[in-house]
Image 1: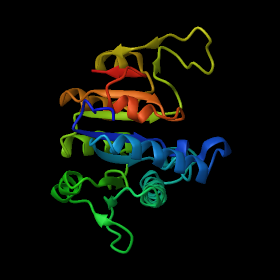
Image 2 (image 1 turned 45 degrees about the vertical axis):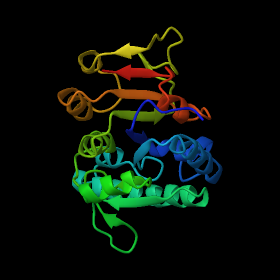
Image 3 (image 1 turned 180 degrees about the vertical axis):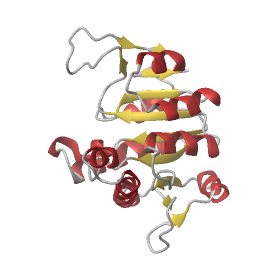
Image 4 (image 1 turned 135 degrees about the horizontal axis):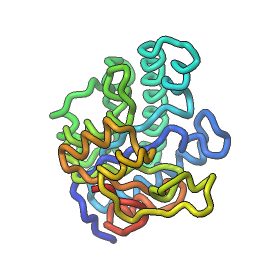
Length: 237
């Protein structure tokens, strides 16, 4: 059994990742694969908090750009993250991983309310905690929610699993000469406007010296490799 280099992590999953090749909605095969990858990493003994986006169902920012009230569209996006959180909880429980969903918006029938001390207690008992509904406030992304929750639960690293294998100086899907960074500073990410996470999330991590690791979620076993300290993507520190 591989040994983790971290005691507690916060894993941020993009909502789009759950859709797989179908683009929208939840792909059962993809979510089951993610659950298996998380399970293998969890079995090393690392404590895992999870934040999941809602872009596969609804994007608040995109809706507001088309004229919808920003606050209203953001609340709709928060509800989308709750759907994803419940789907991921189901997949993890089927894989025999004890899981709790905590929501920043109270909905007692489907999730616990977010209580920091209770979340930490769940983690200490070996449960995975999925933080749903972002920060509970409009105008903040799930990236910011991930940074905030990572700080609150005293995570040692924020891992962002996306559809790209790291951070590049420009979009690698559009530019063949894009250069990948192994390490980069928070300031350089902000200066170059690299779309890793939004600037609020990056600034929050920078102020609290929380490293960010980005890697490709689609590659089976990457979460385990990241937890065990392998250099598989880009580290922002």
